Amino acid sequence: MPAHASADDTALLDARALSKLHWRCRRGLLENDLFIDQFFRRYEHQITALHAEGLGALMDLADNDLLDLLLCRKEPSGELDQPAVRTVLAMLRQPPLAAPSHD
Image (cartoon, rainbow, N blue to C red; front, side, top):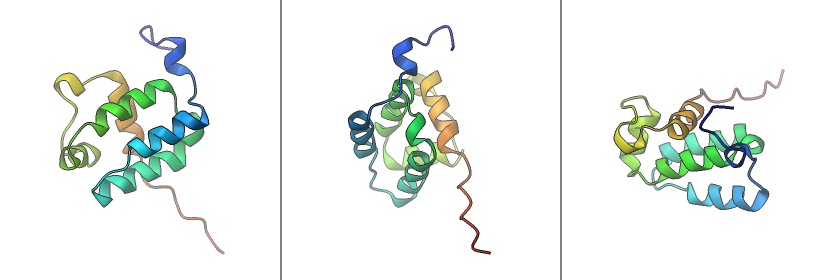
């Protein structure tokens, strides 16, 4: 656990908090929604308060600014350049999960 992280930061979100977070992350731009949906499918059972903090900061951005970050056109700067945001951004940028094979 990083020196600046507290036990509260690493606590997993309960179902209600996770549902509220998912609702808060709804976006008007389909491309952003695709990244966010992938994030929740991949990490739903691992999301902590620290992740929620990072997601919250990213969700305060305009859709096009968020998309620039997701597509690596820009990196977080200023107030947005914080560990929680960088952690969640790295998670959001993960390649899509492979579709199951039907061989």
